[in-house]
Image (cartoon, rainbow, N blue to C red; front, side, top):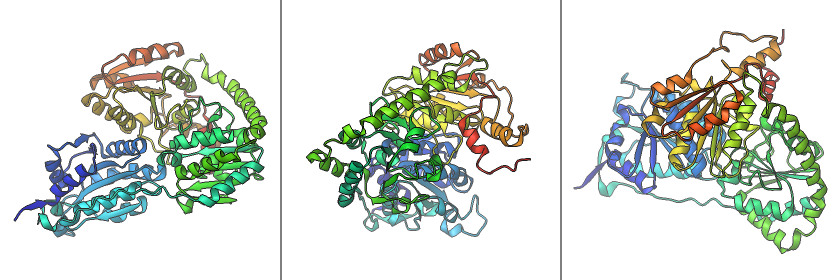
Length: 564
């Protein structure tokens, strides 16, 4: 009688799913899986920390619109992955986290790295699964994958006890399931209602969020914008679904960004949110004109009306919904809409130009130490091709880049998202380069954040991922320091001050290239030199510790301080 182990069944199921990479850090409880993946067509991509492995899987899921896969060992391997999972959950990133654990027979025996893992992670994921029978391994993998990508994407947890992986079962007893889920459901009736509301509006705005990307709606979205003549703003993974260079796209929807967003939010009479959530980024809905009508389209009913009453709530796939809207518009309903919105478009163009003119003082600053927004502008101007990929990580640093980056193409700009998680940067950049070896990949990261997964520079060197990392080195935890200054009148040095660290020299010792920049005019030459290199590069840019970003101001006002 022919038999197979649970680990062998799992490896075969992974291959059936077409997985190319599993991001991982090794351990005894997952060695059975390594054994059967070793000579397969799946690459085990090993990192220096489990957190980084899951961040890489998250970046894969976000940009490929299919579940990224991370594999960690029991106990501390599992707990090291939790921060990344929390970030993925908030960002709606599709991924499957697979963890080993002690054998079923070893429970409550004080075995090595034993803990109850599923109850810990269950509130953080879409679904937590424990497979306790080897013949059901492939079935559980299928459940995990289809759950991660269906509806609103997100992380799924799958646990395999080591004795289940090692157990042998007859081949004929193995249950094999391979299900592909198509969740492009559409609300046809409300498409017509939306068009009617748009005909009554004079100052509509469209906000396209992550749902527009995950539903593969960029083409339908651009058609919708052009059919109506309405202005569009983008957010999160929706950045680039309509290029910032499109005449009807006014870039990011965040009001802190130089441009027309603040004026649009305050002046609009109709807000159309497509796969975007009413979160802190919109002051929980309070940033919008209270007299404006509100339409929200999302795959999850629970999002409709979070923090704000919605006049037209629509549960629907974004792509399918826009396709129906375009059908109605192209049958004649769009007549006169663009003309009606033309004065509004001109008003937004004026606001956009005025706001950006005010921002030039920072973008073009010649101050020393360097203004971090000048660094962001230099990176943005240098990486000016559609295929260039920019990642960002940090507190103030992420804010400066978010206020600056021109998104020309979807899935080419990555930040942590609403969870505000530090340490994502180098793993995201490594994943982006792994997926796009012929594209330029640049990370702008704070000197605080860079310490969290610094050894992933070694991963980049070892794996020959020639990323370029620009550190905005303001000598410490700038966002916290500045928010303390604003609320307390001074920064608490313990915990917010790091001091000067020659990160570029550390990267050189790991086998990369290091460049120190202390003058603004030296940033571009450093970028030119970096992108000619055949190894990963760290550009250590000494930035002004005193510049305060809008993010620091917001943090100071969140209520976390008691003013003296």
